[in-house]
Every structure is written in structure tokens, then in C-alpha cells.
Length: 59
Image 1: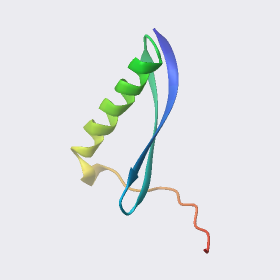
Image 2: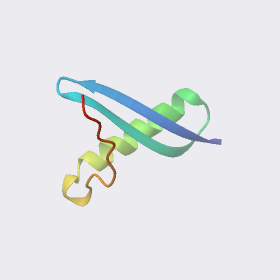
Image 3: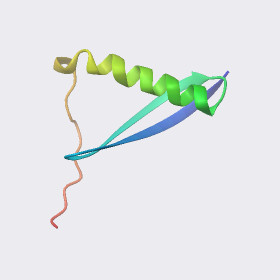
């Protein structure tokens, strides 16, 4: 097992969503699956999270 810093990007109709997580896994594929699993767990309790940072630029 090794530690991985995983950044996932989901492209959705209204914009992109990034999920960053540190996980322990046997390889990179397992690390991606572990990070996806953590994201799905967080989605089950949306009242417990909020956006803490923003990068806003005029277009």
C-alpha cells in the first residue's frame, strides 16, 4: 500500500467539479477508486460540507 494524492475532475452541464483526496491504495487505479468512494460518501451528507475557497475571475 502507498499513499496517493488524487485529483478527480467531473465535467458537468453547468461546470466542472474537482475532488482532491489523499488515500492509501495498492496502485493508481485503486487510488482513483478509493477517492471516488470517499466522494460518494461525502455526497450522502451535503449538509455537512460547504465551499471554503473560491478563485473568481472576470470573463
